[in-house]
Length: 212
Image 1 (cartoon, helix red, strand yellow):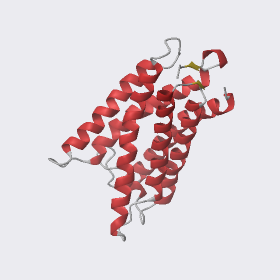
Image 2 (image 1 turned 180 degrees about the vertical axis):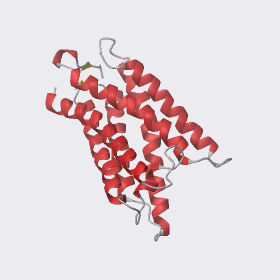
Image 3 (image 1 turned 60 degrees about the vertical axis):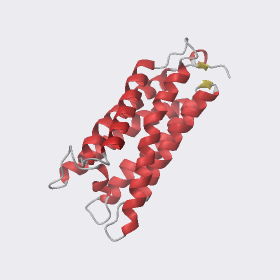
């Protein structure tokens, strides 16, 4: 058991969505003409626009690192099996790709910037839509585990369905990216808060005891 890492993961899980949403509303409400529901988050981080670097730092870079800390907290939450570890790795990978989304900002002066930014962000979305379901399935192997299974199941299914719908609809119709991103991010926000509260609540005897 690594209680320090577990607690760090819990605090990081709660801090990440708070930082992202507060940064989003602060930037969006100050940007004239920005639609809160339909415009993509990345428009606020596009190079050359007002406060783009600050938004990029607070919405992509720092939350990406915090998500990696969440993954460490999950990994060291107790004695876990391979499926649980795989779920923790997926969370960490999602965090790294969120960080990469901030590194590869949209840049109107570079034609490849949008491709790089879009590619890493889509990979982040895809991984993040699978990870909660994997962790939920892994947690079922220990009925005594006090994990927030219902929250993980509901948010995992919601994120997976939203991602699948976005991928399926993109080739046949155009839709504002914000309409996909908002509910997806809300679902993951619930997952992060529930997971953070659980990691902060877990004690040595209540941790994972998943068999290999």
